[in-house]
Every structure is written in C-alpha cells, then in structure tokens.
Length: 268
Image 1 (cartoon, rainbow, N blue to C red):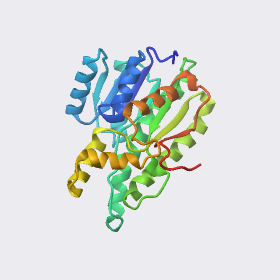
Image 2 (cartoon, one colour):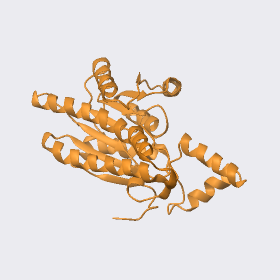
Image 3 (cartoon, one colour):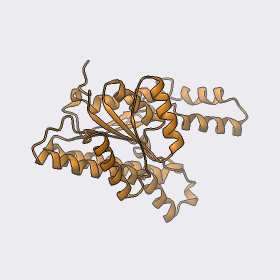
Image 4 (spheres, one colour):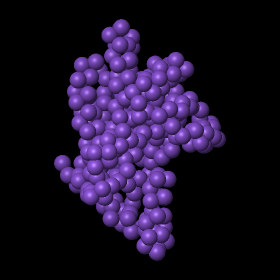
C-alpha cells in the first residue's frame, strides 16, 4: 500500500527515543524527509547512530520546547534545512505523577509546562505556516498533525490528576483545532496509547520489581496480564497508526482520538 509519504517533510518532537523514535523510523522507511527534535544531545546521538545503522538518515535538532520562541526557532530551522513541514508528529513531554496530597499550584503549572505546551507551541507554529502556504496557493498534501497523548486524559487516576488534566486539554485542543482547520484541508488527530514497551516503561517495571522483591520479568508479566489483549503495546504499533493518520489513506479522518490501550479502558 502506497501511503504517499515519499519526500514529505515530517517533524517529530520527542523523536529521539520511545514512540517518537519508532515514528521517525517508520516515516523514514516510507521515504519521508524526517527531522527529529529532542532536548537531550545524548539521545539524539544514539537515535542518529541507530537509524544510520539501518540505512536511515534524519535531520537532528536540539531544543527545549517549553518556550514558544524555541518551538518557533525549531520550525524555522527545519523548514530552512529540510523544507516546509508537511506533517507534524508530537511525541514530546511526559508528566510527572504526584500524590494527590502533594498537588499544589506549582505542580499543576509544572505539569502543563512538561506536557501541554511542548505540543501546543510547535503545533501552533506549524499550523500558522501551513495556512500561509495554502492562502498563497501553494500545494500542501497531506497537511497533517498527529498528537500522541495518552489515555490518562480519558479517565481519572489519583496519582495522575495533573498529568491527566494536561492530556485532556491536549485532546480538546486537538479536536477544536481540527474543526477549525478542516476548512483548509489540514487534518489533526490524536493517538492515546496505554502502557507501551518503551525504555521509560521498562525502567518503571524495574523499580516496581525492586520494591516488591520480584523479578522484572514477573512484574512485567503481571502487568501485561491485566490487559485484555494480554500484552503491552510496542512502539512500532503506535507508529503504524501515526503513519496511517498522517497519510493520504486517512484523507477523511480528522478530529479523531484513537485509543491504543488493548481495550484496558473500555469506553465510548
């Protein structure tokens, strides 16, 4: 199946590891021109080395997306070095969990700065430029954004209240902006992964195993057994859905929130 992604310019935030790196690999394999941004130079170097060993080459940008001007600089740099951005994949930022009794104004602020704004700032700049291209009569296809958010915004967890609020806000922004920008043919969708076998999850499993006095394998198996599908997601599975949503094969899909948690949270 031809997804029509060859030579498309794809910016992936948080693209140096985990789901973001899986997306970088997937789009590069489809022939897209991929740029990844991360604030960690070591992660960027590892990502470049890993992808290069697979015959895949990406543009690297180091930046912290917590500030609007930094996000604007990233979009400008990528647009100049690689080309005008056709697709944005947001996978940057992770919210810390808090004991409910320790939640205060600073905790909520820090969480929004960690998860919400690193998505919103690059998205707004990319959207602004996409609209300018369309108004100038320039071709823009597919013109797509995929926000990889998380199921924490769909259901309440005592230790993920602030992070869940940031996720829920991102979902609302995704649908609202999709509704407005549909007039330009720009599509915006979101994926909400559940537990996914990233380095971050594996480290969490090791910590939990240490607290419980069990092996990491036992702890992982116990967690996966709670998922109706019987296992956690692989980053590549999330990337496959991002590929589809960004491609012309999903040309009539916009404003969608796609759950990917193995039906751990059955809801409509």
